[in-house]
Length: 219
Image (cartoon, rainbow, N blue to C red):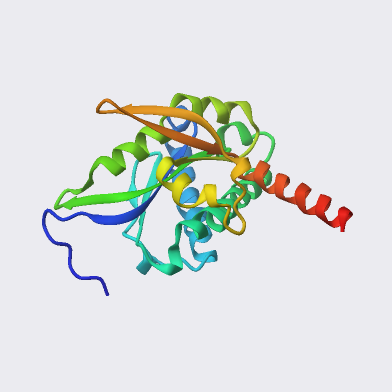
C-alpha cells in the first residue's frame, strides 16, 4: 500500500489521456453511449494487460475523454502500456466500429486520440495539476495529431512525449518498433519546446507482421 499523499509533494505517474474525435458534433444521448463505451474498452484493455484498479488513480473524466494516472509499478510499466494496452485498445475500437450498422456508423463511430507521457503530478483537494499534465494535454490537442487522424481510417492514433520516446521507444524493447513512430508534433509551453512522436497502432502491427514474414522467408 502506498503512503498517503503529502501536501505539496508530487507523485510520479505515467499519464494516459484519451479524447474522442468529433465528440461535440454528436447529440447528447449518443455522447453518453460513446462515453460509456470508451470507459468499458479502456478498462478492458488495461485489465487484459494485468493492470488493475489498484495500479492507478481513479479515472478522471474529461467530458469527451479520460485521464488515467498509472502508478510506477512493474505490473503497469510504460513498455506494457505501449506494446500491449494501446494495441489492444486499438483492436477493441476497431471491432466495435466494425459491429456498427452502415446507417449508425457516422453518428456512433468511435475514434480516439491517445497520449502517453510521464512525470511528476501534483495533487490538492480539487484534483491534480502540474507541468507534466500540461505537456500531455497540449500534445493530445496538437493540430498535427488531429489532422493525421482525419487522414487515416484507423480507430486510434497515439502520440508520445520525448520522455517516453527517450526512456522506452528508442531502445526498441520487445514489441516496440521505433521506426513506427514519427516526430510530427512540436508544442511550446512557457517558452520551451516539446516534441511529440505519432504512431498508428494498426499500421505498426502490420509493419511488424511484414517484418516477421520477411524474416521467415529469409530463414
